[in-house]
Picture 1: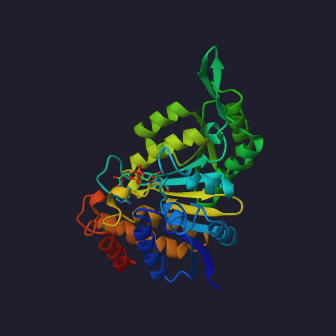
Picture 2: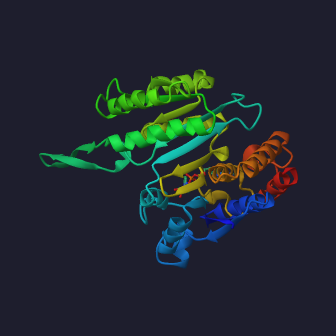
Picture 3: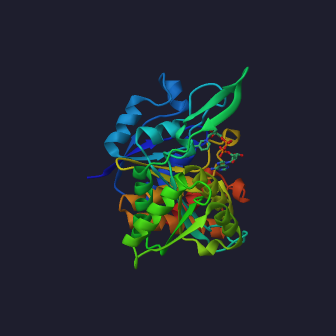
Length: 337
Ligand code: NAI
């Protein structure tokens, strides 16, 4: 029986890079049946909503989606569909690995993973203005909402991830010295849960600002980093920068009932339809998805073929300094599979 996966081609460069990734996955012989559904601007063009019910129903059925980037209109129009999907399926864990792929960059041999809480904290959207006198916007307040439930599940996810992926250490990055309640809850529960993993996974805690500095000075001391939503948002782009930017950064949004895999970059409207988009980040997201599905051999074959293609540099797309196209890059990966 093939495993069914929902495929969302997305907007801008999305259809080109998803098509490239599906070609590579199919070449490994992975037994996957794709259910293609639209979201974002593409969905709005064919139906009246940027997140059609059939797309939601498909993910609910398959519990897995590979998603191209979705355009979010600025100012007017609909809200982010990425955020809507995270809420709809309670995808509480955002997993962002950073691994050196392009030799000759600022750092060699980086290999770390950031696990970001995806549903709570300052991004829970509880904010308002406070009027004083005749100024209705004299002050503004955002609530950093942290629940024991939310902290418990993200920390456990981080430790379980470390065990499942043979990682040696979990670093909890926090600001419990200042935010004694919200971040204190994170730190206390981190120490508590770490005891259950003693002897299997090392644990340390670090203040978030010191973590940011150490990531630049000595990234090799980190392995798995776990933190709350906004800190994770910032650190995840920082670690992408350590390995050459967003063009090679994959991400997974994982919940109890569904998981959505995507590239970290957006729909790149400036190069859409030009056949120059780099499919590598989405391909790395597909590698994460195959690992998640237990198809480790196929995942490893794609990862090695992609790494060799980037290392040998014969078909690189312009963002990686080459003169290749989406098609020639994909063909080069396929040749090496
Ligand atoms: P972007 O990531 O789409 O583009 C930034 C720059 O990187 C552009 O110059 C683009 O050409 C380049 N770039 C991005 N991906 C590339 C690739 N695979 N190959 C070669 N070059 C690539 O970010 P931007 O322009 O801020 O956002 C465009 C749209 O994407 C917006 O509507 C935004 O909301 C959306 N977006 C969606 C995301 C998602 O669906 N996960 C994530 C980030 C942004």
